Length: 529
Picture 1 (tube, helix red, strand yellow):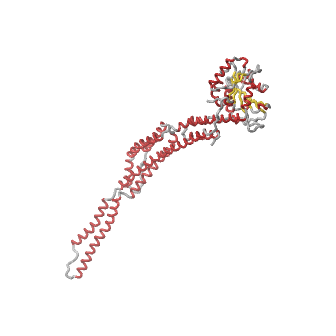
Picture 2 (spheres, helix red, strand yellow):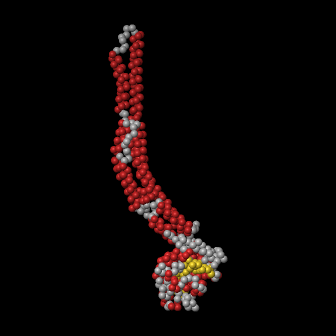
Picture 3 (cartoon, rainbow, N blue to C red):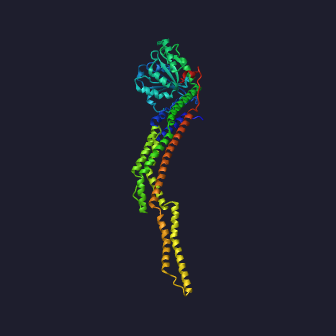
């Protein structure tokens, strides 16, 4: 599926803004995308009214001071429409010369109206060409250079004008090397009447070193126009302004912008593939073992105090803090060390720090609540299963055995009374020994299970202590799980952004590509790097 470049750039910039807001991408790296120039030649001029399917070819004269750029434009127009001569070095004016059927769209930001002079013509032969006379790039006026750079994204073809004396101009040459692949280039050695063939040959060699295998170079002279190649220059530009050529130039520009965007995104992708979350997890495991052991040792005393208080003061609130400042500092040290190690491993530390902040803030509350809950649950069922069974058994025996003993004694009393009443010669059936034995029997039947019940009664302090220790272990395990989950969440979010970035890179390469034929017009005016 083909994606429009502006849509891709917008998505890439939105991705960078989101990654920067989350702290996963530095402002410096995000700026690689935010500073990409989205301007293009299609945005400046509307299509011709006579041919709405074809927009004009935008051609600009560019070169150093005194090479005759404005003179060439005036020669084309047949009148003085551009400043030339001694006025030129101080001029900060851009001159536009186009057919009257064309209409300028809204000027982009950076192209002020007070820096533009517009002239129109009705020459049908040049109806699909817009001529622009640029300020001198090597002028002492810094504004001239800025204005040239503002206009360059809106230009299809550059007429690089030199003179025999100034064809090695360094400033304009540096611009050619930097912008060479972005535009079509035609070269004009003006004032040919003052030059030598060796200068032309040397200029052609310089262009060959820059990457042009067969450049189009035209020798002109505004003072002696007879026999020069100005007409050939116009003819080549008219061929270049054809609908097919303009469309190819647009496709070429789209391809280059996609390539540049792809290269920029690939630079950012290298940052996103360098993180080692697995190593950070291993480092955390080692840090946690040390911190957990320290916390368990340090919290043993307040846990013991709380267990004793609960055993002695059931139902009363204890003013004893399980998680004190010392414990919080140990946790903070662990989390700070984790964030530091993440930064050293090129893992974004800001989002990890933010993800861990909730653990810093809530550990005291959560750990205290969970530990105390476990302690209270232990107080409800103190001891182990065997102890609780024996407690219930002895409690039953405390009631059942005395009742059984009293029943046995009562039976003996009743039986003795019955037999004594039936036999007049029988002796008294209640004696001292019987009474003592009966009391001992009843007493022992209650005392023995009562004693056993008391002896096997579990210690509330031990039960509370055991419950609190168990709750602390569970709470620390949950803290560890929360930290690991926070790191895993950060890793997953990082991977999601990396996948989105990979998708953008893939879509950048899904656009159309254009192959240049050797010897063709476009093959000669476009520089392939």
